[in-house]
Image 1: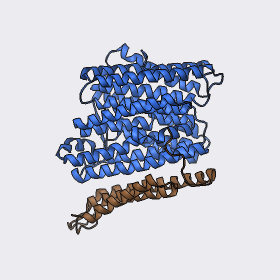
Image 2: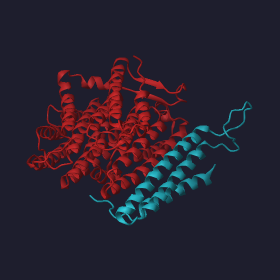
Image 3: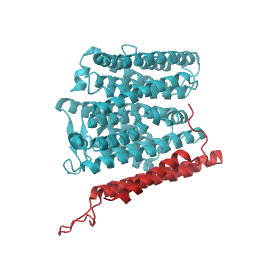
Image 4: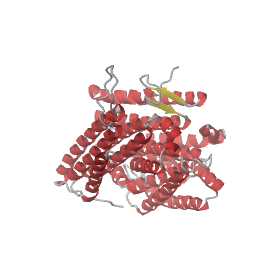
Length: 110
Length: 441
């Protein structure tokens, strides 16, 4: 059992979700989203992890190694998260220059 | 000719990044790429129709290890629809090379979602489409567009996190990312784990597919964006993601998941149509009406396991909505249908959306009602007819308001071409009464 990892994952995603729903400041919302992304990346790494496994590099002598696929997925997910965060910060700069604030007031309008 | 579906993703993706180098001729270049993609999608459909479903491995790794593309009749047709509407819509663009770049990225991503056979690959294409759409919505640079894009982005990013959690749960149980491999072995998964991953995936994709509790971004983003971008959103990302939900339903194929999708579709339909009924702003009304139509498509897909009418129904509603609603969004930059082509596009588009014969929208609702009648779920039939009546009322109001207007949109000719596709697609099933057979093969 690797329960500390899974508890951390659950905590990161829940804190992030709380931040997205409860905070009004857009910067805090995007920080919360980054937290959620980190939580998912940790989840993927934990799924692929084998106790005492080494890096998945094929060098002739067969050793116990961790599942390489989740690591590739996490690499992709990190890059996607980076690009989303970069675009978000650009939009926040423009939002600030248009409205003079980072508070989001419009909310759900039907 | 050797037809590789991967070209349809690779060519626009590559040329998107060439755009900054050829700032001057970017419009001609992007247009010819889109035209080429449409031609490729016709060839792809011809091949899939003649030879059956097509599987292409990438980089020489055979499935289930490698990433691969899986194309059947429906996905080839959807790839064709996305690309042809993208080509027509591109004619209306007056923006600079950055627009062309993002637009090609969005088209490549939406085509990728439809053609891929790997769930993580699907996630990557979702992100490509989503990031391109956020930037496209924000490209208008005023306050409303920025707010809409930020709202879209918050919900979209949370949705993508949920989708990735769902993928991680499936991978932890089955050690596979291949859609067909997952579908074959899904029954060996624990029922609780299945529901957990299904809920996460549905929540994640549902944001893009405009399903009910997750669609708070839709009116703001559609209203804020430039009218040709609202049009792109309504035939590109949303159609690709509703198809992804259909694939998800096929993979999990439990009767309870179909039932959940049916309820979700009904709620989305009712909420969208009722909200559209109360709107005064044209673009917001069209956006809410889109939500309603997405609910209708989901209802059609959720009957997939019960009746053979479901897939033709969903296909025709997708055709009708992608052509007519995109055309109406193109016309929405001015209040009024001044010239003949915008009068034609507006009228035919509205008739197709309401479901008048012989337009594509009629066949969609016809097949859907046939399917519902087969199953004898009369409550659903009543809801569909009720929503069609509401739709007719607010579209009549919309037509009345616009026919009076003297101004006319600059996009009226591309809009008329788009609507004509809906008419052609509506007359084809009369010409040869085989549509059901073609789509079920």
